[in-house]
Amino acid sequence: MKLTILGCSGTYPGPASACSSYLVESDGFRLVLDAGNGSMGELQRHCDLRDIDAVLLSHLHGDHCLDLVANSYARRYHPEGMPPKLPVYGPINTQERLCGAFEKWPEDSLADIYDFRTIGAGCLHVGPFRIDLTRVAHPVEAYGVRVTAEDRVLTYSGDTGACDRLVRLARDSDLFLCEASFLDDEDNPPDLHLTGREAGEHAQKAGVGRLVLTHLVPWGNAARSEEEAAGAFGGNLTIATPGATFEI
Image 1 (cartoon, rainbow, N blue to C red):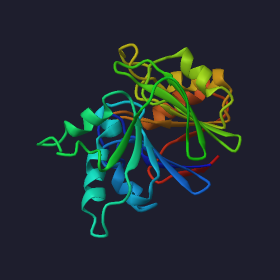
Image 2 (cartoon, helix red, strand yellow):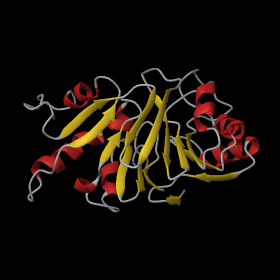
Image 3 (cartoon, helix red, strand yellow):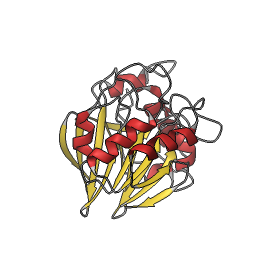
């Protein structure tokens, strides 16, 4: 299994990164986890937009889903013709969320472009991947995502505050891609995002092999987030950067 960081900025794109999006590949199958603002540009460095096989959205905040609006234009108007419908797995109302971003609701409600499939807590199979989903602590319906292929495991936190369910989901993962939006000395609201320290604590409790910090907000301090995480997690620790790849 191979992970490529397409975007790792939280809330809005930073000067060096699009918002959250991650390409996961195994056995020739390309799964995109989240599609935040600007991420389809980075994706084109790695494959044609029409060559992805499925998309899974952890939740419907704009910094995790809105580039599927841009992607719909690429699929609808490409001079070589419209490709087959792309499966899009997301929370309830994913179709309505994307259609509402247009100045006029698309006549086909994007149903000619995307095959919308509603997710919930539990297990599903997408291509070669087993995907386990659990609700995490965020103001909207949001999921942590555990992806397994050939006995290798990637867990993605999505957006979440401190959450025991995320620890259980990430248990013994080879790589834990975990958000770390906040810093410890801030007056942080509950059930919204993790600090670097909290990301490290979740990783340590889950016994993961490698921790990759993501969803780093443009006004934050990535070096401090990494230091906070390192104080709580004794394993391999990396800050996500656009284009970075990890063999899992």
